[in-house]
Length: 404
Image (cartoon, rainbow, N blue to C red; front, side, top):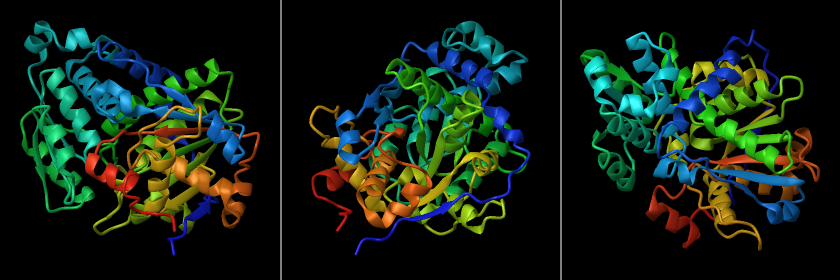
């Protein structure tokens, strides 16, 4: 018997919504300008799954495909790189608009700024992005990974020249280790997408970096005749990506925002637990946080994102691993005529959940509560490609995490 999906509608009291401004349109425009200065930059595809939409009974289904981001197979580099640029700009007393790729790789910059060491904790994608950006910009990176991290992800980070370790710690404890080491290091700084009291500035910059992806998706939807998606399904670990996407689209459509549905791995469903409690205070999940959705295996929410999510999300959904595995298979073997989307474990949970909601009567209550029907124009984000080839084959070829 497969484990059931759990969900909670958002009945939390609203806050004063002070964090929504983090994802203002001007802030996101600065991030997108910065990323576009990189020679490796290109807009990642928005794959239109017309056949899948018709099969499931939706008006439209669109997948923002981050497997092509900077050649790194995941979106995470957007956040780390922009946070590094904003940190450097602040240290130099300059505006981030001056921190173009050409300047940051110039001899003049090396003479003016020198070198910093950027510390981070990661399951793989974020650390690879920080390591890549540090390498490209002539900076140092130290990356700590939690126990159970895969060797391919470790190797990809090491290839970028970072100092990288796998610790006998869970993700949240790796964050604490990285923060402690940064504090003891001259010109050391932690670049982490989770926020806590006293550490809010860099996580807010990381969220703005993620806004580049959301901004691209809005432009691409308009190009195919969809002015505004009716529904945005977005996955969450600490919630930084979710807060970035929800914040951006709420600012873009302040009078008529889409319905937002946040999805988590059941083993690390801290946002769902907060929604279930219903009092507006964040909750944490402890333990090993074991899930195939490694990028979502985070037990402590980003406090900035939490504030955005509690004010603007319609439903929080806790997803067993089979939901993501099914999504991976559906995207990799599409309906005839649709593009193939190679999506990793943390990228495919939206596809799996939407299929479950549209096909099965026992999920009708949630489907009806969020108004998902044949008129819906649905946006999802495949946040990573095949970042763990062995695990990917076990799911796609061998049917691991079957739905029966």
